[in-house]
Length: 98
Image: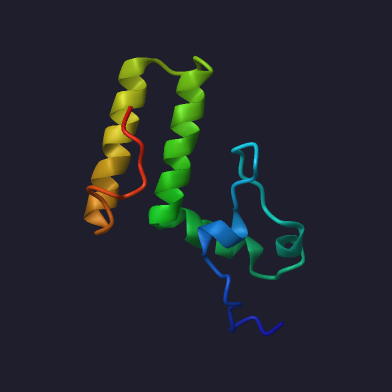
């Protein structure tokens, strides 16, 4: 694979870090052979999709009592602010508000 040319899935969070039936995310085996895997996942996690993944992590941490209500609220507020700054926030952004 040419190092300069990225595959079509490059940086697409649902392709490089899809959610499985159990609600957890895992990198597909096909990504392990790709030369761009690290840069690709970093790029995907820096976008709005990555913020949504971080939001999922926060919800799981709260549900498992690893973080408290105020920490969860603060982190979710920060993620929502960052989503709005990126232009994909607001209603229908895919972030559950509990």
